[in-house]
Length: 198
Image 1 (cartoon, rainbow, N blue to C red):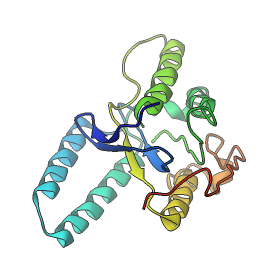
Image 2: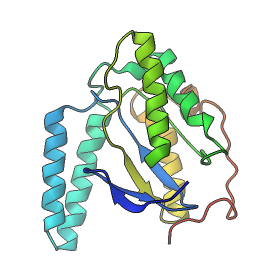
Image 3: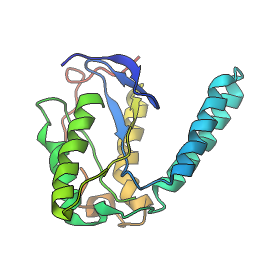
Image 4: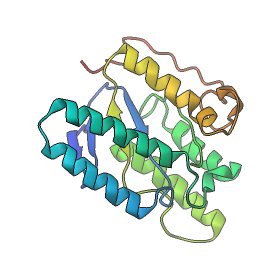
């Protein structure tokens, strides 16, 4: 598979490098109101136009808090609250493990290039069949972040595992069935398998 480096598809920037470790977030199409997405785009544009590093940092923190608030708000149909649909997505994630990528942690709750397209497209087709309908299941794009170092890697794993707890869906990460913690997933990680971004 060819790696595209830094690229975008009209909205969010993406990083696609060989042997990189990435955190990826994608949402259901109806999970965030369109007006909120427009507001985020405007805030991002303002942030990019400024040169003051302190302003950019503060704006980024505020924007990420707003996004996190909406992620946990439960907008839309919350299709993934249904275990059948959540299972379809989980199966799509696991299917390419050790073939196209190494899956380390994941969490599917209702609230990367070709790989993400495969996860989203395959699961959307199956969910639409079960619902006897057609149309969008997922939002158009996704958010990815290149993991910078060991601390960032550890923090990302903790964040993923604690997502369903934060959303009030369970008391402990391992209680959430549609996650790496709930599936007792234990991916081996070594310097040979992944080179963290410097």
